Image 1 (tube, helix red, strand yellow):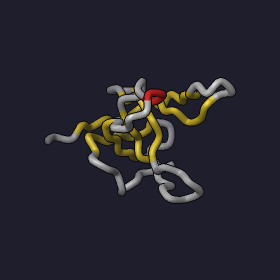
Image 2 (cartoon, one colour):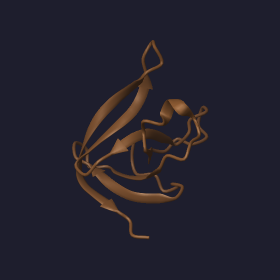
Image 3 (cartoon, one colour):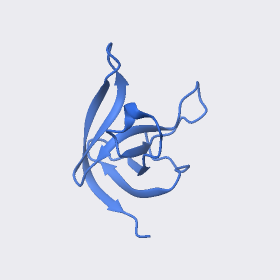
Length: 92
């Protein structure tokens, strides 16, 4: 996954430490209850390809992001922990 320029209402961006890719993120405005634990959407690309949404639900903190990458057999999110090199919040 890499930097995605078609974000909706971005509030910040970060550089993922391991590979160095840039990502923008926005607030999670989806009305579904199962994603309410994730306050952010990280824009990763792929929107419109095979039914993909173009974002992943996430919890973005100052130096780390927890990204929902899949769900397990019980429907619970499987998280990846991404270390961040730089996290910049955009000014309004």
